[in-house]
Length: 114
Length: 111
Image 1: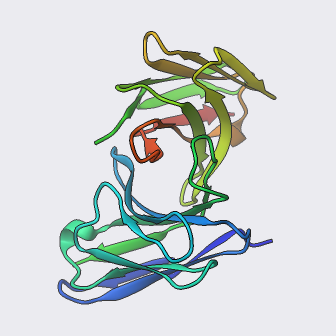
Image 2: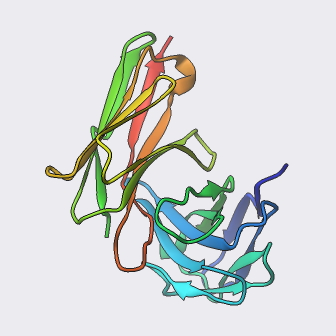
C-alpha cells in the first residue's frame, strides 16, 4: 500500500522555468492538498481540492496552479519559477475535508530555484 | 500566518528521559493534532484531541489541551533514539476548516 506518492523527489530549476509536481494517492481519499515547508515556518497550504472536480486557494497560492486530474491525482504547477519558491513541497490527502480528519503525507519534493 | 507556535524550537535529551513540547494557538479551534516528521520524510499523524477533551493518551504519548490558555502539550515518556524527529501541532477551526501547522519542535534523543 503506497499511500501518497510524489514525484520527483528532487528538482533544480532556473528562474523562469516551469515544472509540474505530481501526486497520487491510493487510499480512495476525497480531499488532497499541497503544502510548502520552509525552515522555521511550518507547513503552509498552497492549494487544496476538497473533492474531485474542485480546487481552492490556500494561504500562499500566488505563483502556483493546480489540477485535480481525477480522484487519485493532484498536480501542482509552477509556471515561471522564482527563487522564492525554493522550498520542500508536500502533497497530502484525507478521507474528507472536515474537522478532525487526519492527513496522510507524501515524502516531499525538494525544489531549488536558481 | 501560523496558528500554532511550538515551544521550544529545539530540545535535546537523553534516552529514557521524558520530552515535553508545547503548542500555543491564537483562535478558537475544533481540534488539535500532533504530527511527527522524520528527517527528509513527510509528516505522520500521531494523535488528535478535540476541543472538548482535556487529555488523551496513545502508547507513550500524552497530549493535554487547555482551551482557556489556547495551548496544548505533547509528552513523550521514556524517550528512545527513534523518537528523534520534528514534532508539529496543527489546528483547525478557521472558516475554511484548514489545518494550520506550527513551526515545529526539533527533538533529538541521544542514546
